[in-house]
Image (cartoon, rainbow, N blue to C red; front, side, top):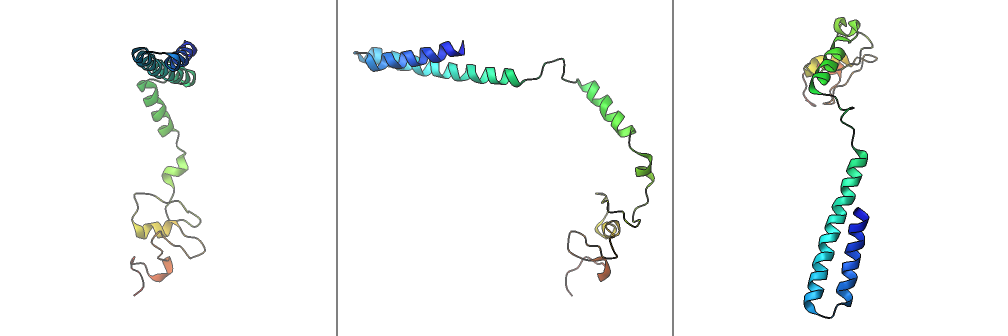
Length: 129
C-alpha cells in the first residue's frame, strides 16, 4: 500500500505540472503533498514493524522482578565477605569516602585517588602546601 501512495504522490505532482487551470494545479499539489506524507508514514510504519519484538518475547513486570531477585541471590559468597584494603584489591566501593578509596587502590605502595593525591603524602586531600 505504501508504494501505491508513493505512485499517487508522483502522479498528482505530474498532473500539477501539466494542468492548465490554477484550481487543478492547486488540487493536484495538495494531493501530492498529502500522498507524500501518507507514503512517508507508511514506510516508517513498515520499518518499525519489521524491527519490533513480538509480544511473546517481551517480559512482564513480574518476570523482570523475578530475574532481578535471582541475580541478586547469585552473587559469589567471597564478594560479600571480602576484606577491603587487602593487597592487590583494586576495587572501588562507591559508598567509601575519599580516604578509604586510597586504601582500595593499593598498588606497589603508591596509590592515587581521582583528585591526584598519593597515599604517601599523608592524605588530607589538599593540594600542594
